[in-house]
Image (cartoon, rainbow, N blue to C red; front, side, top):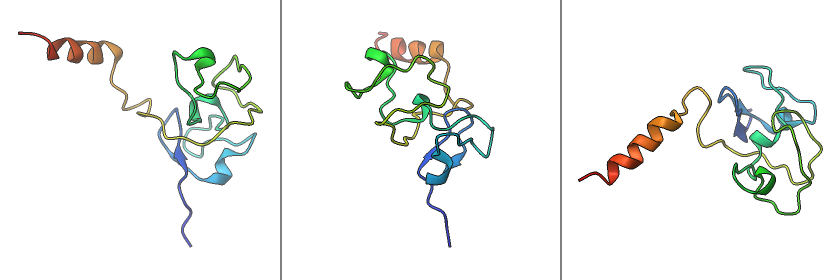
Length: 99
């Protein structure tokens, strides 16, 4: 019987199952808490409260477990280990418009 992967850890990119997202759950790969804003599909830096869900209560620490009713496992855009540096992204965008 296989276990369905529901998302990935915001810190290490390890695959997480539904059971890993318990309120006090931790990532089997790195030990970080999993029921956190950074693992939620609604997490969107730059938005009000860094959350796409407008009715969600404000959570100050996005890396600590919380009681948000809107939490849904999400897949981060890139894992921390494989994320390109902000300067690299900016340089690539600027290169698109060079003549």
